[in-house]
Image (cartoon, rainbow, N blue to C red; front, side, top):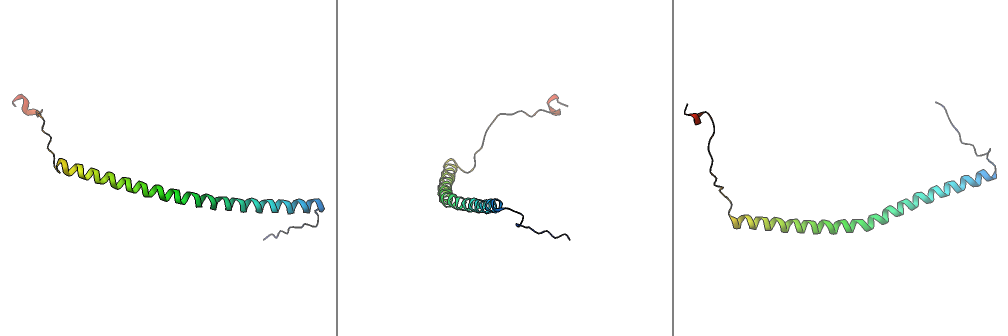
Amino acid sequence: MAQYSLQFGKLGWRGRIGLVVAVALGLAAAIALVILSLGLALILIPVVAVAMVIGRWRLGKMMADAEAERTRRGAERTIEIEYEVVGKDRDGR
């Protein structure tokens, strides 16, 4: 298995400063992303919860209205139509 080592001795003072600045910027970007994600979650979780409560309430209301309409009309409905059976018996055979 090959072993690798990271050596900073070959870097000059500008390289070391650049490395420190790059690491600091990377960490700052990662922390900012975490803070932004948590902030959005804190805003969106209540919005989604309220939308779900309103949606569930409206669905329940629509279901109750549909059930009331069904019982008002009667559970069973008969559709009467005129029809003629078409087949072999039509010719009298």
